[in-house]
Image 1 (cartoon, rainbow, N blue to C red):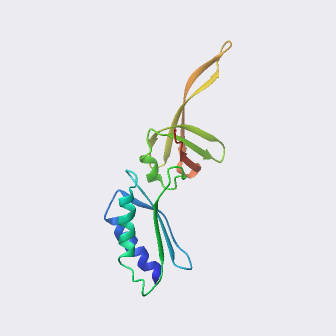
Image 2: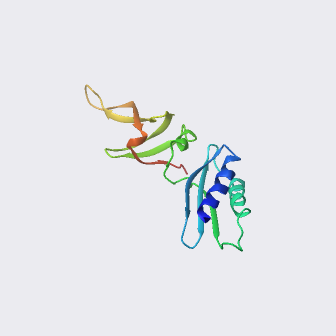
Length: 153
């Protein structure tokens, strides 16, 4: 079957570089193959070409006509795998959970989830005015509805 062949070639291409991993993969009814990859150290154009060739050079267009698109997960795209968080340690993140939204620096990643840290201005416990306090929030992967890196321009 066509999808099985494509999956096999895709997996072989990814196996050649442990840095790369699959984010999304689909084949439409008219054989448009879409592959989205990410990497522990980011993704270069050369990485996309390598994966594209691993698939394209092993398929026969005489047998099946197809279109192929290999892309990297966009910088503004939400994260879908725990592995993606590790490469973004130290970066500012926007994380949405069922209960609340958080913005802070990603300071750690564990098997269970992430830790965000940020500074907030809160009223002084005694007297008037505000004081800056350091906030820390641990969020489990199961609780994250959406997480994105906040890009600075």
